[in-house]
Image (cartoon, rainbow, N blue to C red):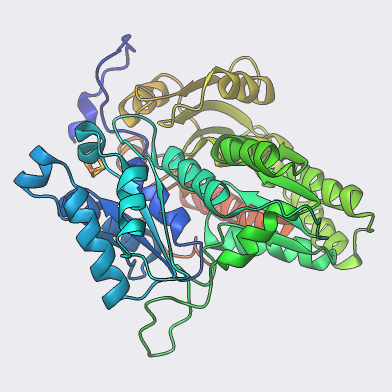
Length: 458
Ligand code: SF4
């Protein structure tokens, strides 16, 4: 009911965000850190921050997410968090024995101005970091950016701390995925494996945040990229960054630091973008596309042709993370849908906005940044109602208020499961996504059909 008070008229806002279309930086940094094997994410700030970061990830993945905190109280807030972090490092290695601690900062520690490089060097000098173990950190002040920025910063920290150019190239291609589900990471690996390509991918959260239940507690599940593999990425013959916003910084660093030739492409969501990914893998490795992938592609094309009449011309609005959004817009265009609005709380930049507008069409409203919030999205929808809305769980209030079917494709998703097991990337992911869209459109058609038009075969 409260949403009924959202006015249709859109007013310019500069200093106010209402219902942000994002979460905070450390959430993304923690998620990326979980994609390294035997890595414990550590939140350098108050317990409240860490509780929020962990609960956001735990609720989204319905898995217990491990993470530690520097537990700031009043003293640390005034005098700085050095002693808290030093004590944390000692306790974490003694109690939880990770190979790596990946520290992310918080608003509080950033405002205080804690010098993490100095603190970690001091911990090294004081022998608080056992031999063979590592502490890395990413600066993740949440008064700017979003969880995607935090993910990007932690991914860069991985390249900065681990990737090494030994001068002897290996045969692997390095894959750097943007903030995507573990199911999508699995799908990307599936494509590379089907093509017989040697690869190193990081982070890789598959088998960590969607690990199988075997009745035992695993502090560190089997998944995650081993540290040695990340080191070897500095010698890889080629690197492919998937999703430009979440990986740009890390891709550039891998190129400049280790002299690895790197290309950036969009996430392989839908037929066109997956074709681009597969073709780049094929050309860079001199292999042919196997029949198994051609079959997956052919099946997706088949369903799209068979049911085009249900999706063609449908009006859609989308909110979410910039890289996933670009892929989803491409998917919608492939299916002949009309994209009305694209909104992300991540400050993805003018270039991203321009690219999405070019892809979606000039009539599409595209906005990124703090004022591109759910309040703004609701206003846009009131002025031009779509047939479908893509977004996260928070969009359900708008969807219910306006009776628009919602497809959950953005972070976080708290009220449905499946996203961590079922991909939207690759040809198989495109099939899942298309079936989801078709189901929701056809269910709606059945619900609203008059008696004489209620058909058994649609
Ligand atoms: S204070 Fe900052 S880091 Fe902590 S939960 Fe809030 S936004 Fe995130």
